Amino acid sequence: MKNCNLCLIRHLNALKELSKEELDRIALYKRIHHYKKGDTILREGQPTHGIYCVMSGKGKLTRINSLGKEQIVRFIKSGNLIGYRSAISNEPPALNLTALEDMTACFIPKEAFEEALENRQFSRKIMELLSEDLKQANLFITNLSQHTVKERLADTLLNLEEIFGTDKEGNINIALSREELSSIIGTASESVIRVLSSLKKEGIIFTKAKKIKLLDKQKLKQIAEGIYSRDL
Image 1 (cartoon, rainbow, N blue to C red):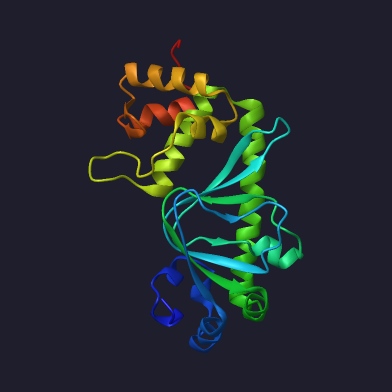
Image 2: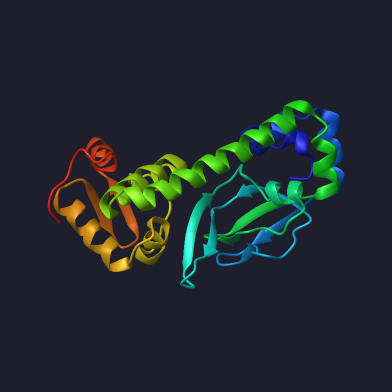
């Protein structure tokens, strides 16, 4: 949508803090891009010269670890702003953004973004996003070092449902391969398959192909917190 003032997505992020006039100025410069599943929107180390506002679709932010394997850091959905850290620091992105399904995103050039930062409410929201990113990075490191694979997977499944919701059949509304799940929690795909099978046998989840339904979220929460376990 060309007119930012008529776009409902802006109410999901920091752009809601901008005035009608400020949004009109952004609309003059922004560009709308469409991506297919598997397309790379951001590439690690390559300058972006602006930020993205995701209009529709889902994506994943990844990095390549020391072993040369992909590590999923975060998931992206409609309403998310992407690239603000790079735009503020004048550094290339440290992560890759790949579309998990067809995506549409508005690209806002750096100059227009910097002008918007003159709005104190908007700049405050961006600072809050940067703070939350740092918090999540610290939690990610803590989870890898202090929690078991089962605990990390339980926490991940709960987070995925919270982020993406469920479809009409009650499944988490995102289809991820076992390799992608293992990438999120930092383990081998064989370990993820084994834990998923265990959770399914215990009646805590139901799986069919890439679909996962959470049947007993209370037990999942207990597993994630390390206060419920059964032998695998």
